Image (cartoon, protein in one colour):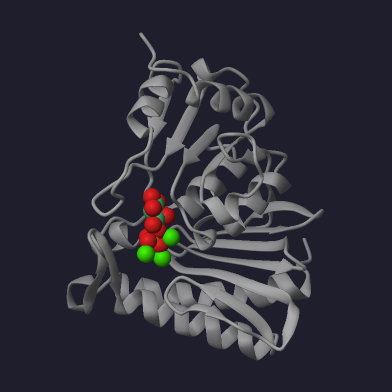
Length: 266
Ligand code: IPD
Ligand code: CA
Ligand code: CA
Ligand code: CA
């Protein structure tokens, strides 16, 4: 499969940052780590990876704006394009030596997601998607899972933690999903959660309180793999709200219904 020029640019940036993360992952105990807030860590590895992505993307497409987790918003001369970047999604895993983390890069054109790349350097799994062009893992076409019943489904989620003050309805939601799904998983990287839904490894996923950089690339992967994503109330402002439910059509619908039920008796 021939990749487009823009996907090539994103892949190059993601893989270069991936090499940096892999080196740092091998020496994780020597990294400088600081706290941004309770339970919210940032390390030299996050910043180094972000610098690489920023440099590579700015070189390839001068003038595009950025929204990056560590740098925040960076204006560009070009007001049509914006990169949305999480240089290390899964910092807590990374700092604990758990090899589940990824780089996530998305491109918006006129406010619409048009390209996304998620790269897990430990597994060497590269997920790419372009609007209207399908989703791929290492050049293999992806399709969301075909299971239609929650009782057969493995569902990913995020678990609120220290610093995520109000936990919303998480425990109610979890009890409802636990009572109906074949299994529930927590990977610790929202970008990979969505990539796994796109790849059909997980049948569905929900999480609230995320940021645009956690989900932008993953949402495009899910859509381009034939899946559905929305906010729990059906809205489409996932990048603003950070609240996401995803799956194939049937599982997405079932999850939306299940999440909003009062506490399950099962
Ligand atoms: C985190 C991961 C995690 C999610 C957290 C995010 P970070 O991103 O995506 O899965 O549950 O809420 O903050 O901080 O490791 O980039
Ligand atoms: Ca973070
Ligand atoms: Ca993240
Ligand atoms: Ca991050």
